[in-house]
Length: 417
Ligand SMILES: [Zn+2]
Ligand SMILES: [Zn+2]
View 1 (cartoon, rainbow, N blue to C red):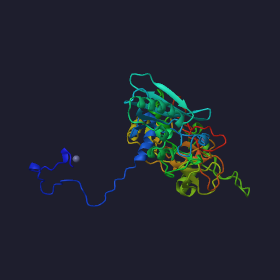
View 2 (cartoon, protein in one colour):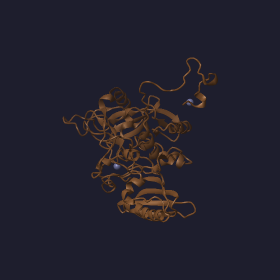
View 3 (tube, helix red, strand yellow):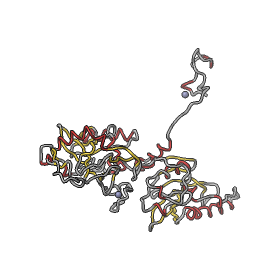
View 4 (cartoon, rainbow, N blue to C red):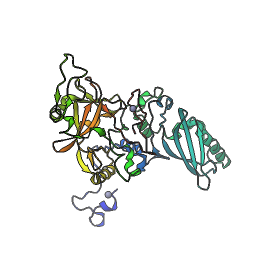
């Protein structure tokens, strides 16, 4: 059936020659649309205000789990991310023939999940119910609903067949696919995975945490919370004292050679020609993909450059809006109060370096060859095969969406931002 705009132009329904009468094709057509990935992106950034709907369920936020929460925040059939929120449209507890909204959410209380339902019905005050299980809290709704429906003689419901986790939406395939891909969920040992590993939700690769630029604009510097901050003391020019940096030696110098000192500019040129031999991309032990040392690297060696385009603040703000409207992860790196390096489109492989609270590398801004460069150098000797990481130093902004850290370091601060 063709819509008005595509209906044949010929008179009296007769198609003109060559005009299509319908879109039927006699071969298979595959329409590939990664819906689940789109949903994951949307519900990972609740401040964007996206929701998605499956039948009578509207998902608001997927939430997340820190490594310590994994053990208690799952059952054999569902994972319970903290911060999860969905709205279920279901029969009213007050009127046999009406439906109302049940906002289901998961929070943490004393180290275990707390399941909450906020009952929203027109003409009534919101009611809040909580329990330590999804079933427990839904039973508080299902009992009264069954009574009302018995009274009004409507079809009897069988609460015994309704599972709290289902009503919460946690077992809905689209939701389960996302919760199964949350960082670190492999640690949910009682849970049986249905969809396997599919990294839909990933930790930030140096992108701004949760769009805070718009949520909390800062008068002085609109980008402070959007970008990774390099080590402040490292901002230096190539002609200054930093010319004298140890390129080799320390740690791994077995034959007692005096350390060879190279000017930073020559270190930089060496790195530019050699970086491919320094790193390889692999499956990260922190999360998703990561960058690894392809050989032993001595302390203070420049490992790789983080490429990008230098933008003035105003341009960066405009670009960020464009990227966000296209649902792209934004990779920006502050170099001074006026400039930002935008690596969203051409950041290169250095973007895959994960955050760690106990890093082996550092990101520094240096000026070489008439421009700013962001260089990743190691702060200790790194063995071949070690994963490279540095501290993103995301600024923590009050009220901002927190991102759980999975670096696994004993001194882990639990949150990336
Ligand atoms: Zn049409
Ligand atoms: Zn950490």
